Image (cartoon, rainbow, N blue to C red):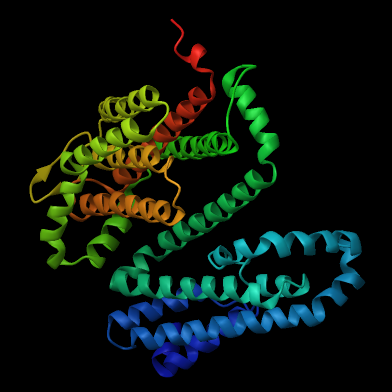
Amino acid sequence: MGITTWLEQYGYGLIFMALFLEMLALPLPGEMMMSYTGLFVYEGKLNLVLSMISASAGVTAGVTLSYWIGYKLGQPFLRKYGHRVHLGEEQLARMNVWFEKYGDKLLFFAYFIPGVRHITGYFCGATRMPFRKYAIYAYSGAIFWVCLFISLGRVLGPKWEIYHQSVNRYMIIFAIASALLTVMIYVLKKYRQRMLAGSIVLLTKGIHHFHSLGKVRFLVLSAFAALVLFVSLMLGLIQDFLAHEFNQFDEVATYIVRSLFGPDWHNLMNHLTQLGSIYLYGPLIAAAAVWIVVGASDKLLELSFLFWVVIGGEWLDDGLRLLFHRPGPVAAGFQLFNTFPSEETLTSITVCGFSAFLILRHYKNGLVRVLVVAAIIFICLLIGVSRIYLQVQFPSDVVAGYVFGGVWISLNVLLLEILRMLPANKRFAA
């Protein structure tokens, strides 16, 4: 009897039980169950809200039970047999301390990695992570995981069986990248001073006289880490471009965007394209320039970088598109050429991002900073989604624009902060 037959007969009860048992480390295909559930929702055989509630209840019940099993039985078992796998009392104590401090951050992403999600509950219980902390991250991650896969199954509909392997792979890559980013943030926080000293010496080539605040030093290190991350992504994109490996990603991403936003969104998407134009960039650049003139101490330096990032970003974009020379998709008999990377997303991330950085660097209100950053990210995403929806650019073009723009903006933030630390007489020496 196949999974679809079982799902037709037992419905929500099967969803609950399958995910409950999978969280106890039984070898059950959780993503497949949720994706078929989404397919049944698409076909009208199941209710979306009830399906998500059943799946969320099953997975949270499973991770709760696995935690308490690990809590009650895990440490005695490890004390008795752990030395055989190099997990003696001393190693277990160190692991408890580390996992209690930092392991909770990884729980949210663990559900996307097969094999890892099955043991996190037992491990968190065995390491005596406080249940309240465990529940916050484990429950939110589990509910997000099930809702995402059910929604994907509903969006993909009858094409789910064609795309599900690609979607699963991208979800695993996303989870691993998120976990690595979490580890990177932890390393930055713990070894910040040591890494700052080394990176500053390396980047300034042994300059002996620099003056900076702790905030500036942290900005230098953060910009350097962002530059390394974006350069790594850029090299991977170039490699995939040269190997012609974007076809499946473009097909899946375009289908998902077109399915999420139906024909009724067409007029709005046409209007959203105006966000990637001078109508947005002009006032934003002007506002950043006025803010620098009014409130910045290094007016000449910041104004120079503002206009250099804008103008240089345009030159970079033109050069890259001529270099890669990739024709865009054909939509309604119309085709753009040289669309890799996307001009709109590269310009949006550089102009909006750098202008916001210059404005917020001197602004003290933390809530306003968070809201502005969220708004910039949202606007840049809307610009990219509109290009994909209107099928004037491939999703890989859009992603490449974000990545190449991230390289450009992080490089210039890094250079700006390094120059800001130099004594003024050396910076502007004739």
